[in-house]
Length: 265
Ligand code: ATR
Image 1 (cartoon, rainbow, N blue to C red):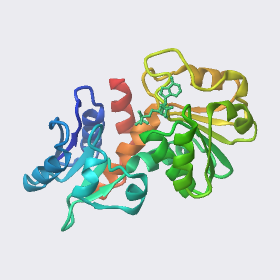
Image 2 (spheres, helix red, strand yellow):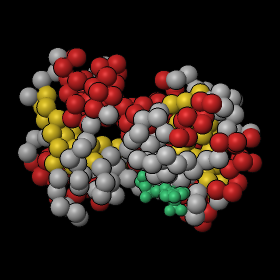
Image 3 (cartoon, rainbow, N blue to C red):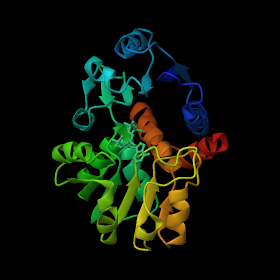
Image 4 (cartoon, helix red, strand yellow):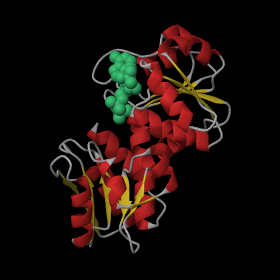
């Protein structure tokens, strides 16, 4: 039996175990997915311990995504993002990936959103970094808007072709944008939005990285404006799907994993 898992602190309410285990069940893979909660700053030690114990793969979440960089051979995209959320132990050395970036790309792709033109990424924290690199790698022109404009500028300097802005630029940016991704925490467990409703329009596809609640105010506003909407559970699903496929080498049973994830939300 293979053991996969998640390190984070806290990991209590993670939806990854039911999502991954639904995938193992659908493909008849003999595996378990368990959560581990090492103390803060013990991320690298936890990766080394997992390797010794024969764990086949680990997801990594807050606060360990940066600590783990030094404990693994880092994939170039994860290196540029500066964060690892998936470790694969199948090679000689543990290898670290960032599937958050690909998760956003695959969530949009799954909804037939074409990944050319301009994407506005709101937020320049961990999620914003991953999504900005992911969309730029697909060839999109990325505009990053953040409450603290200097953080948007710093991130934009690292992402090919990107520019940084304050939130006051949103109306202008969105008037000619194709894709909008909310990567701030605004809307999480509150009926707030970081994007004024009047700036949304029917030619936009809107992905909200927030998945609690699943129907955020931003997505409601986007729906009312006639935009295509993609909720945050899709992004969570596809970062998991991408990790599942790296670990097992199989095409993931997306519908089964999606159903298990949404049942837990
Ligand atoms: P994550 O890893 O989820 O991206 P983070 O790194 O803490 O979390 O980043 C949070 C993001 O939400 C930041 O872009 C933050 O903006 P600042 O850089 O200006 O702090 C943004 N954010 C949080 N609260 C916000 C608010 N009330 N209005 C606008 N942006 C907010």
